[in-house]
Amino acid sequence: MLYYKLKNYDSNGEKMKYPLFFEKIKSVYETAGIIENEPMCKHTTFQVGGNAEIFAKPRNIGAFMTVLQAAKECQMPLTVIGRGSNLLVSDNGIKGLVLCTCGISGIKVEGSRIIADAGATMAQLARAAYNSGLTGAEFAAGIPGTVGGGVFMNAGAYDGQLSDLVVQSVFMDEEGNSRRITNIEHRFAYRNSIFKHHPDWIIIQTEFVLKPANQQDIKDKMDDFAQRRRNKQPLNYPSAGSTFKRPQGHFAGKLIEDAGLKGARMGGAMVSEKHAGFVVNIGNATCQDVAGLIGHIQQTVKNQFNVELECEVRILGD
Ligand SMILES: Cc1cc2nc3c(=O)[nH]c(=O)nc-3n(C[C@H](O)[C@H](O)[C@H](O)COP(=O)(O)OP(=O)(O)OC[C@H]3O[C@@H](n4cnc5c(N)ncnc54)[C@H](O)[C@@H]3O)c2cc1C
Image (cartoon, rainbow, N blue to C red; front, side):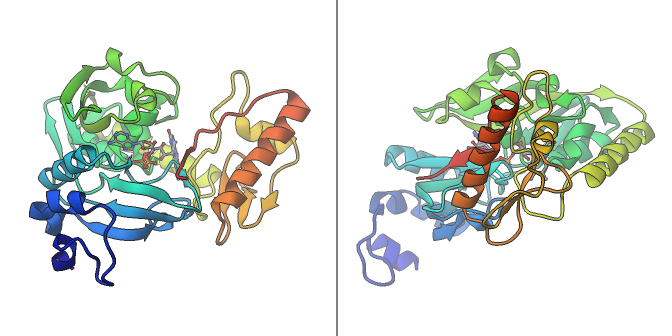
């Protein structure tokens, strides 16, 4: 396979679209986890989405940085994802490179500080905190994303959010420079951070600070949150979690339920019967199905209650 890449042709003898990119990454090709025309439904918890032209899941930070630099130097369209747990990807797929951080997942604890690579999971973060007798990250245990995706979104639950814990992040800017920002410079707000306004900035690592506490208390809190999730959320169906942000003074799920939309369907997409704040994939949903249902919910809630529901799920692709 590599032979064909270096010759600028694929195995069918067709001219490759990004020969320079493949030339630049040839030293890390074996660890770069490159797949061409990869279905994004395999990399999103919604299990929806067409093909990424090139998908890469580098296995170490060296390969990750080489692939990232190469994509920037070749001016390829670039999309960075974590575990795809907040994504709705277009049926037409994503042009250029989709770079997944999941292979860079180191995590280390130094006293009351935890330093996590962007691809470490939120569950790993919570587990590392628990193991070290540190409180503050219990809310993160049940959020199925990465630290990078969590910082980007300022993910949170049960009155906790990452902005409460972040000390600083290291990221790569649009020019390929490594930069560091402190908590306040993240401009965190409800499900918002500076990274949402700079889609070319790629989070590489984040440092958190927590507080010492009794380990049993930490475990009890994590168990309680996990139980609440199991009771309330439709975890048996693919989804991207809460579809909408919480509108000021309301709960999205309550508004949707009161609008009579529980169980409403469009193709393979359905408003969960268990929690109306979740649109779920009940079988082979397309992006068109999900986006159509989201639009229908927004319109109905607007008509009935004059409240605008803003999507929390990120829509990517063409
Ligand atoms: C069952 C379920 C329950 C959920 N519960 C919660 C919850 O309680 N609270 C909550 O906040 N969310 C929840 N979510 C949503 C989701 O898990 C979070 O938003 C999570 O933080 C997304 O992380 P991710 O790694 O999957 O990011 P992705 O979905 O892969 O990406 C999300 C966005 O972040 C960007 N991004 C990802 N990594 C980086 C990086 N390294 N640098 C720059 N940008 C990056 C992507 O480009 C994209 O725009 C839930 C989802 C599911 C499926």
